[in-house]
Amino acid sequence: MHKILIIEDDELLREIYTTKLELEGFAVTAARDGLEGLEKAALHEPDIILLDMIMPRMTGLEFLKAYNLQRHPNVKAVVMSNKSSANDINQAKALGIAEYLIKSHYTPQEIVSRIRLHLGEPAGR
Image (cartoon, rainbow, N blue to C red):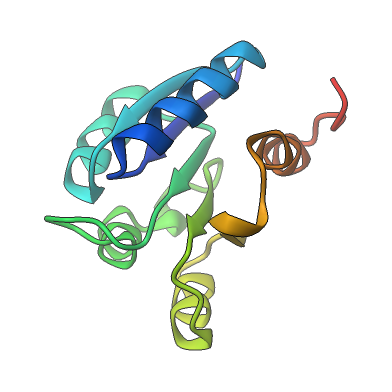
């Protein structure tokens, strides 16, 4: 079973994605911000991290810098944010993310499909 860490400060979105991913057969851990995300990533060693960009205490970019994906070659990070400036996207890509998704452009089912793609699973499982 693949493990997913969701780092999202919006409680409703965190619950929606947690429920959807659990129903799809993933083991899900959730964090409210990047700081809590660092703690949970160390404890749960996720396969994929779904990461918001704008959060209190530690932003998505700050999380990526602190976590350092190069030290975790088996972990993929997918940013899900409504922050869509080219500068933000380029900074996140330079830090090694697998993909940058604009939240408002994707349904939860489409997010599941993107996760499966990054895990090398069939999309319609």
